[in-house]
Image 1 (cartoon, rainbow, N blue to C red):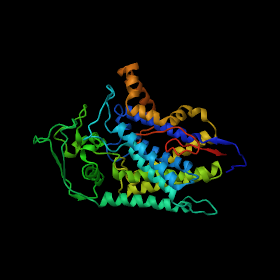
Image 2: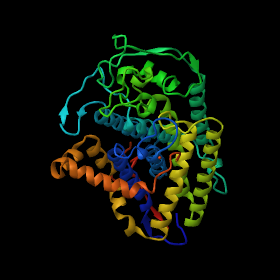
Image 3: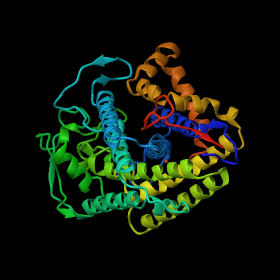
Image 4: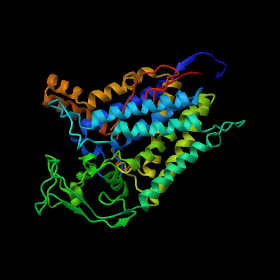
Length: 437
């Protein structure tokens, strides 16, 4: 593929830079969210800065897939490799977030198999990656004289519509009965007033998107089990829960405040795959379009269309909610990812101001290593030992003060990974490409 008659190739560094930005935001919100709650995950509806990180990584994973699978030879072999990559990523996620590593101040090892967390950040990405990869490997690409993102990849858009329909149908159609929670063994809540450590949550409804009675939580409780869910859901930060400084929820708080809830649960993984498929379409434009201007034009149209549709759905009653990974949330955050990628592409790959983003590019190339170090608490322990708790807190406060002024929107805000790139390999997090310009 020759562009403007030149055979010289150059790496699309903007993809690494964007990934590096996600890693940087991950560090900021993970260690600064307790200092500045405005950048932490929104307790329920709405968007804060932290709520952008996960869909951004999913978007990047999808975009990278189009590059990695631009030429698929043996479909069965490619499928086996994709499945193995997804399984490895899932297992790594269980190890990092399932309960094998404990505490930032004392790295101890071991796991209670009866309470291990099944889902998590990497697990969700592995599922979304596998769905998008199978779409790219097996669904035929329609050949038209003129490239059209909808016409050429009609069947992939059908899968995206199917995933959205199944999600909406289950979210609004399933009946959620009353249910009970016993948090006595978690140490996260005070005993119930009746002394039995059992809280009853009154539901008996369908189509409810509250923390207590949504069908996403019900599906996870039935399939994964209550003891295998995330024990510190963001909704415990709602005022009604009266969460204390030490993380305990008083017994006079609503019963659902004591319940675990997994923000990376089963139902939300359907729309997570939708995010990956949207990123995949941006990758198709990158691979198949001939010049910078045309790429930016098509990306901008796709981003704006997705953004408008997401806002329309939110106005129609489907809220922006990261914990539930609603369709409106997926569309709005994917559109924001598209806008940001366009900006980085223009700055780094078109105008060649690569020196301005060299630090972010390095972080993007080593994203998975950074994620493992942070999630396992190894990095923070080393910093604490070197700098001391007070100095580390001061450094984080200064960092947050400097960056938070750029991200103050409560409506439009875990994260993940990376790896190393080798051209033509299938690496879902760190797959840039050598493309002719």
